[in-house]
Length: 459
Image 1 (cartoon, rainbow, N blue to C red):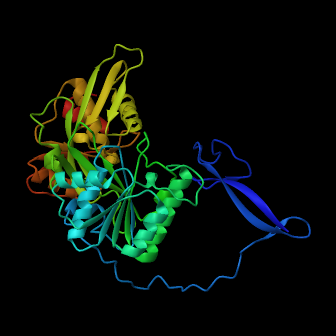
Image 2: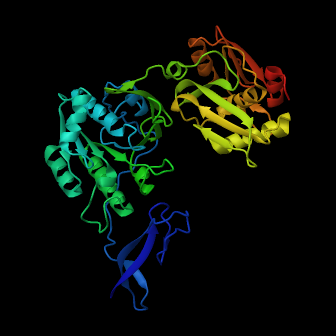
């Protein structure tokens, strides 16, 4: 006799249980558990013995690792920064998820990209679930894209969208946004975990089956993560984050997952009155407002993906009127700042007790690589000692808990970018191969104590 079995599955980590709860025991997320109901057949003992519908499948074709396949063809948009982040262009049948804060410029970027791909020969449809067609046309007119051959639709019903796509047979579809899509096969409100997961699954499956590239726009939470179940990020081929500070005109398009190219690649844009314009030399843009060397200001030679980028790190150290000093960070990891402060105090004898510490990455850039450790330490000591670094110097290197300095990858690329922008010296850890870049002198040091003593005469 058929018997109904009910399980409850977490959409974030996949853990299952036989009862519902508000918080998943596996990953700790709240409101991610939903009900799954299936049928099973019972044997003579009453126990489930075999799932209904379990039939013998067909044989699949197997290949070996030596099988060679041609790389997927790519379509270039003409926006070099976007093509760079995508890994060299748009791949057919790919699914791309783009997330970012509200008002950061996601819709503007994708409307410009839709126009560029349409002009390149791709049949493109832009589906908006948040704006009417007239609103999208107004933005296109403001951006100078009114004549682009892009088809528009304002719809949230997923069934109607898929039916239209079957008839129109486009090559690129942009869905803005996935949180507004509604599927009549799921009994929940639009924007819920079940709706987002179902809509993303149907759209990506439809795209793969019909050879259509689909771009999904996703909202982000207050923590900066794409809203909805994490399984959506696993469904798609590429996940892009559009970052930037509202007070700055710079915007960073960052790839955090890419099956067709390098991850952590970035594209840099500048927000203007006529939309987003590409920045071909982001280092020069980030350092454009930097004046004479001052205490607390250090230039860090970093690498984002395959691109070397120079940014300015700014630190301020001041006596604290509070019993608990402030530790404020913008554009870097606050936990790593605490580690650098502890190493400076325990290994170099430079205390920060009773001092407020503020650290900022100029230009709205966000840095995650450990090679920024030495530049952060230099900015902190420079601010505390009220002593500026030598003019024309860049700093990079990782700091260990013992105070030793570890070499950073792609040192040669960092030095070449620094020399191209007019810097004459670099401070970096010892180790690695010998590198000689004309026009820039490299001062290598083995530990943090030697660095503080030689550069600032402290420690």
